[in-house]
Structure formats: C-alpha cells, structure tokens
Image 1 (cartoon, rainbow, N blue to C red):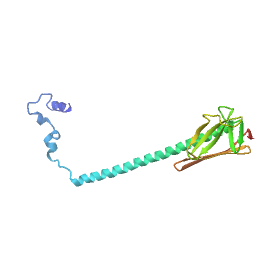
Image 2: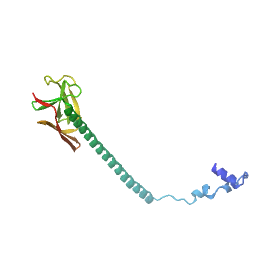
Image 3: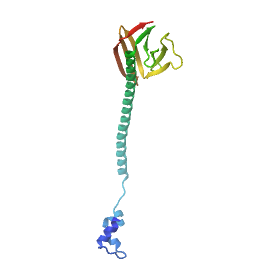
Length: 196
C-alpha cells in the first residue's frame, strides 16, 4: 500500500507504462541489490556467538534459580513464624480469658474458650513436630471422646507451659529447615490456679 502510494506520487498520479514499474522502485528494494554482496558467516563467528549466548544464559539462569531459592526460603520462614505466632497468641488469649486454671500431675489444664465445661491441655509430638490440643471434661479431666484431640500448630521444635505462682511461662520455638524462631512470654494470671 505504501509502495503503491509512493509510485503514484512519483509519477504524479499517472499510471506507469509496462516495464516502468521497475524503474520506480528505490534501489534498496530491488531484490538483486539485496543479495548481491552478502556473504555467509564463518564457523569461528558462529562459535563465538554461541559461546557468548551460553555465558549470558548461564548467568541469567543462575540468577533466576537463586531468586527462586531465596523466595522459597523466605516463604518457609514466614510460614513457620506464622504458625508459631498464631499458636502463641491463641494460647495467650486462652490463658488470659480462662476463669480457672487446673494443674494435675504436672499437666496444665486451661479452660476452653468455646465451651466452658471443657478444659484443654497441650502436648508436643516430637516425631511430627506438632502441638496437639486435647479437650477434656471439667469434672474428671478425662477425654471427651471422639474429636478430643486436634492439631494446634505445626513446625514446632520446643514447647513449654509452666506455672509459677500467678505467672504462666509460655515458650514456643518454631523450626523449619534449621531456621528457628523463639516466642516466649510471662503471662500474669488473674484467676485461681487449682491443683487436683
């Protein structure tokens, strides 16, 4: 379309005669001129280009892989920290809202936030690195039956819940692929602590 417009403008809108079309084409469009002096590339030039492409792709590829590894490491750390932090905050809230805390055979029972007739105690399963929540009946501190045990937090390497006078010491250490994060606090208890 552009070429036709160029040709018609050159001839001042007259239709050219037969064979005059070739004269109207600029020299750089002529197919004879395009291929007249072109030479191929040598094997050495080809090898140099391939070597440079290999180096560039290697550098870019290693940067890409390093970026992906860094993202995965950061993601694991955030996941581990979030899991531990959520468990820590839930336990802290449960301790503060509890109307009574019971201790029996060294196990601390904290009143359940949903059902006041139930109490919870927590254990760390060292094999699975999970804190397990166990729900018991307030009257006899026996399991409520089916559904009494549930997973509370994952990626936990250490867990402590210790009561001294009117203070509860809570410590949770999360561990994901060797990266440890410790969360600990002394929580003042304003309720009765009963030994059974």
